[in-house]
Amino acid sequence: MCTAANYTATDHYFGRNLDLEYSYNETVTVTPRNYVFKFRQVDELRSHHALIGISTNVDGYPLYYDATNEKGLSMAGLNFPENADYKPEDPKKINITPFEFIPWVLGQYETVAEVKEALKDINLVNISFSKEYPLSPLHWIISDREESITVESVKEGLHVYDNPVGVLTNNPTFDKQLFNLNNYMTLSIDPPKNNFAPDLVLDTYSRGMGAIGLPGDLSSSSRFVKAVFTKINSVSGSSESEAISQFFHILGSAAQQRGCVRLGDKYEITIYSSCCNTDKGIYYYKTYENSQISGVDMHKENLDSEEIISYSLIEGQQIKMQN
Ligand SMILES: C[C@H](CCC(=O)NCCS(=O)(=O)O)[C@H]1CC[C@H]2[C@@H]3[C@H](O)C[C@@H]4C[C@H](O)CC[C@]4(C)[C@H]3C[C@H](O)[C@]12C
Image 1 (cartoon, protein in one colour):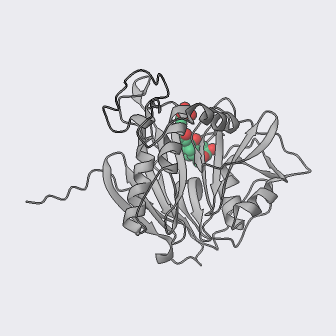
Image 2 (cartoon, rainbow, N blue to C red; image 1 turned 120 degrees about the vertical axis):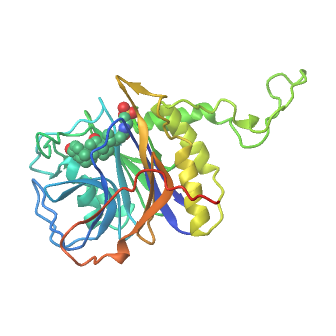
């Protein structure tokens, strides 16, 4: 399971939890402007916006999970099993493979509005990277400071939904996730009023009772409701430190602890949580066993170069002893 979100304090932030039972040796990867992005069915991009995000790099190609470009546009791919349906090549469309989708969008566009226009001509074509890296069933959230969309290639075709909550998890399809929020409209951050039985004396015996009924399990639809409630009601100071702390707490509301979701002989965990300051191009992250925030600043790299730059994730707790 995964959860992605965006958030605006003074700056704008975008990030995700990557929930899985194994890892692909992912790294924080900066793709500079002159790295040649080759595509299977369309012309290469010799010069493009620079990107920072997390990827698995195979044969020098960054297979991004989530990324932000130097213009502040961000995108993340999340699992969408049984629903994702990629298509045969369509000669009337721009045929992009799912593994090329993040570089193709972030390499060229600056805003969600531009992406929406471009998506009218896109076909997500069923070509995998290689035998070892087959097609992943994904859907995507794309955000800038102003708006977010969700893109789902399903049996009926390519669906592009406005995403008014700036959150994405996994199944079911995004229209159903949004509809499900109707069921929670009475939840509140304030103490509840007794609408249940006004003649009964009912006591608000604990803080937080306004949100009783907010799901706490780790299913995708429950994480969606929990993350939306937490994000929409989030309050943070405007400093970088306060904003990124708050953002990691939003993701923390839907994080997976080892032992709660069994998959055969493994457990799904939140492998990493990320928070990119999309205005400054700084990618912050934590890992399951490293609660300290680490960061990579894309602008400290030579963004005019041609080679990708990657940083291994710092794993293992960094404990600051005080005596
Ligand atoms: C499985 C990951 C998403 C995590 C997630 O949503 N889990 C939820 C599980 S569930 O629905 O609740 O069951 C996705 C996100 C990005 C994906 C990776 C990226 O797309 C990059 C390449 C793409 C290649 O085609 C396959 C390997 C891969 C390296 C992908 C492996 C895997 O599918 C990743 C890591």
